[in-house]
Image 1 (cartoon, rainbow, N blue to C red):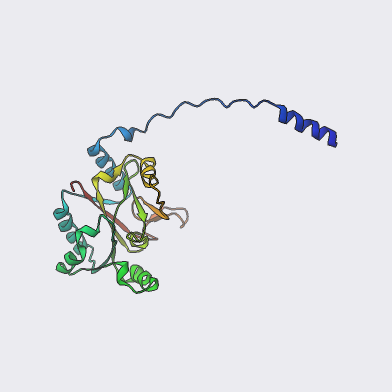
Image 2 (spheres, rainbow, N blue to C red):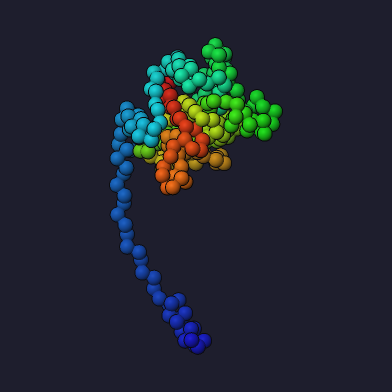
Length: 224
């Protein structure tokens, strides 16, 4: 192609009037947004149970601690790694654990990261965390990580026990993400958890519990 022909084509393209894109109809609102609190709870429980998660609704913090003690005994947990987030910290789990023969440790109990990492992978049988949001449409837990919510606590131990206040259940991912990014402080890491860990690396067959927690147990606190 000659330079004159190329320039002529470019001039016609530059002079062309762009056609407006056809407007798209607005998406209808997700049906989950119309659900009240009780139905959101029920939907979340159904979706998480479908993914092999276990949910224990508890009426108040006293019932929560009693249920937690029973779960730790059933799972034969002698030592648990506990987050220091705003949901878990007020429960006073260190003192409660001593009463039931369970040692409750936190990342701050270790002098350096290497020892903490070894402990969370090899020395504890469970990780206990709070939950920032739970997505009803998929049964997903959303954990926003910071100094109080270390990421490995929910990913490394074989059992993950999550404490979820019912008011933190939201209809969909968009609602959770809008709330997380509404403030000026943006999180460095967010974890989405839908049931126990799962992989399909082995012959393309889904398998739960290969990497990370083999059990996900949620204590759903219906009243605070």
